[in-house]
Length: 247
Image: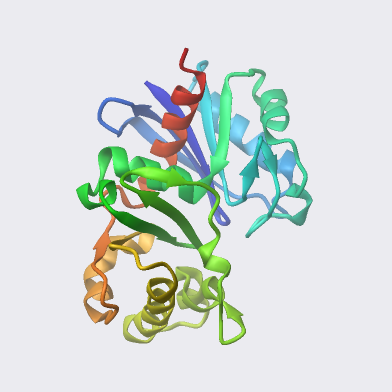
């Protein structure tokens, strides 16, 4: 068993994970992300979720941030005070344990999808994208992660891709699936032009309704809905804690 916590712009979610199957064991607990989402406020919320599960083992935690040597170097959709935070030390103090791993949220989701989800994520040059508060990205070559990519911040016509085509942008501007899919399509065309992937795998909560927008895309690269959907971040976090601590 493992335990993963996925920190997002709107909610923080945690669950026990069966590392043999990628399935949750028991219920997932979700708590709204604190406002402002400062390091201490988020760490306290993560500790609350871990305590609620009565979990005493290693913990994996995802953040919408580039994580280098356990230091957050960006702060997308969380408080700017995260930049420069030593995240391992922060969560170790909040949780009362050293046995933890912290990684980028989309990277965690991509790794989980390779292990337990879409088979096509394991072969070729695959771009895994999560559509949520922003657009998270994980680049995978034959299932191996190239970490800490930030494709959601690529500029299109002077605007960041995630400001145009995240699911939050769809909600914020009350876009129909047809209008939103046109924006997603423009983003994917640009990614394809620059990176020439063999496939896109799309996740996040809105992937549950992939039938409403994926068929509208015209990009000349297969676009495949993720199998784990918005469970992937928690699963990948639990996997990271297990792997990080493996002898």
